[in-house]
Amino acid sequence: MAQTIKLKRSAVAGRIPAASSLELGELGVNTHDGKVYVKKDDGSVSVVEVGSSVSVANLIIDDTNLVVADTTNLQTFIDEVDSALLKARSTGVTTTYVSTVDTGHTTFAQPAVKGEILSDEGYFNISYAGATGISITTTSAASTYVYIDKNGALQQQTSTPTRQDWARKIFTMRIAMNVAVGLIIGFEYLNNPISNTANTTRDLYNFLVAQGVPFKQNQVVTGRSGDLGFDVSAGTLLELGGTGDINNPNIKSFDAVANVGFFLTTRTAFDSGGNQALPKYWDNNGTLTALGSTTLVGHRLYRFSNGNFCLQYGQGNYANMALAKSGVLLEDYVLNPILKNATFFGWWFIESTATNTGGTSVTDFIDYSISTQGGSSSSLSGCLLKGNNLSDLLNVLTARTNLGLGTGDTPTFAAATITGAITSAGKDVGTQTITSTAPTNATGFPNGHVWYVV
Image (cartoon, rainbow, N blue to C red):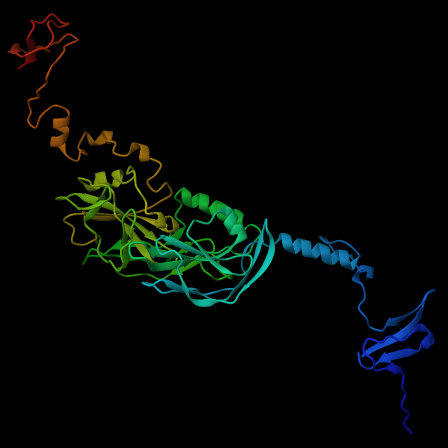
């Protein structure tokens, strides 16, 4: 016949059997708490819970194959592993996200995103739940930078992020605004990939961008035979943290584009986009001016990491293609600040008489190669090129007048002084009466006369 064995027990919550109520090897059960106790005697009699947590500080591990956290104490091992993991972390996102903006309006959506912040303020594990219909705080600023702070709250700023900002905040995107009307133009992703070298890599990237390095591959720009538009082949852009994809954080791939639509911009403003013909205007010190007869301009072409193209008006007017190609490098160019976030492709040159961009002598695209984007030679802006023998003067008649030569071939001077001998090189010499302010001259010619070659 089956026998039921019952241990000493109690149904009172939290009650632990006294040492005097148990024999060595005997068990006591608290049926309310679901705990089992045993009497222990290691020189000091006590009652302990069976299966209770054991202090890892007293556990020993095998360190034979350990290299970094080389210790036999389990607690020490755990502490050293955690310290190594912390040193390998940085500020950035750890999940992929897809942001959206309401172009032509003032709201955007930031989906759920997880990340980490490691800065001088400490380490923070971030989990943002996401939101839609978020309003732009400052519609008068050209750029709004969206970020998540150390408390997990979504924030906005209009100032360009500093190096400290990149460490203290998780940036998710930059939203471009048309400040003339206070509406969204578009956005680009903006974040740090998780890596303890992320900020160092960004430093290098920013310095190279400042020196004009174009981080692009392929994307060849070609003209069109039937209109004033252009095509761009497939290719890639590199923008650190510019994809929103943690598995491919930096490289944006683009398909080929036929008859590219682009934004037009001046020094301070963008239009609404959708342009497909190169403009025959130039930026004359802030005033858009139509090209004169057979003159040229060199516009600048840019592309953002979201794929949008932008053409900023050229800021010089040139008499011919050769002068235009050399002159754009010397322009004291004023770049629209928003375009500092874009990749510079090169210059589109167009003459006032152009009707298409395909293989003509009055249009041409020059791809940008490594050098500054028109800044380092700004001290030479407006200089004449020696090899052009004054043919690069914009207005020859005005230049003659400014030199006192008049508009004809006979110069007129208010006064003249001769300081050296005059030789005729074997030619006849005659005299011409002039009015002189000097009573005598250094060469002994009669006062009021000058010798000239006839």
